[in-house]
Amino acid sequence: MARIAEVHVFDVMADAEPIWRRLEAGPHWATPFQRFDFLNSWQRQIGEAEGFRPCIAVARDAARRPLLLLPLAVRREHGVQCARFMGGKHTTFNAPVMTADFAAAMTRADCDTLLAGLRASPAHIDLVVLERQPARWNGLPNPLLALPTQPSVNACPLLTIAPGAAPTDYIKNSLRRFLRNKKERKLQALPGYRHLAADSDADIARILDAFFLIKPQRMAAQGLPDIFADPAVQGFVRAACHARLPSGGRAIALHALECDAEVLAIFAGMADGQRFSTMFGTYTMSENARFSPGMVLTRNMIDHYAGQGYTGFDLGVGDDGYKHAFCKDEEALFDGFAGLSPRGCMTAAVLSQIARAKRAIKQNPALMALAGRARGLLRQGARTQAEPQGSD
Image (cartoon, rainbow, N blue to C red):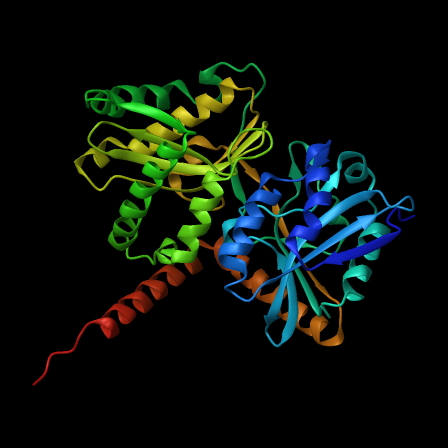
């Protein structure tokens, strides 16, 4: 039986804000990527410029008490009106924001009522795309698993930290010794060497200035595009890093390893009191890079959050080797594609098959190697076309 009695869809962030903050303030189930302050910054700086309009579904019970908020944004894609989670590629994880008791009791009937409310909304939605959802968060299952779902293209390496665990329980002593003796000892010789959890406006601005200087150089050296080159993305990152949460922290937590001469490594992510999830980072282009400041900073961050009683830490989605050096578990993520109109149903089926194909390639080392070579050739071709041609 459904507990949801009505669904209202807001198309203005400010109109949904009181309900959003009320849900956040009480016992609730959501990832920190669904905080109002974070997604409001994204919508103002990026979403609006990319043609997204807020489409925020709020579900209430018969007494009109808010039970759930689904933070979606809608625009025309693939010839249909498509609603997807706000935040785009800048959210590692997506989820609804729900009261804790409703999250434990939500049924398939509630899910169907939620979709029916979206179908009836003035946004004329054809398709709902619900990607990169954790199957569990902080030990509790995701109620949207009741809908038809499929595994996401990638999973997320995860470090689970037992309460009160000794440091060598969550990071092996061999790795600690390697980082301490072979890497950090050299960095400690640098004047002013320190780990900084940036909180003041001045420190945040200084660390971000360094990030936006180093990151394009690092990406160019790897032959990769720099997603942070867009001024709108830079504006979003700066706004979210500076945004102060009602709890006193920042919407994005910023960590750095630095010395008097330079910023050595930077990582930024989301902290919610139980889990830290890394969003982005980089490390110096100087000779000090050979001392693995990114790895040293990661170890410092894990110790920092373990000392605060956190039980989970991740370095984002993907199979990079450094992630698995610290994160030995793997968190399953899932996607959902729900058509709300005949055309939306056809598009959902196509997008579902494309996602399955991408996952199959990721699961096959030979296909992954072939895809990597193809991407390399495409990037090389793009660079060749961009080079100025000499005259005869």
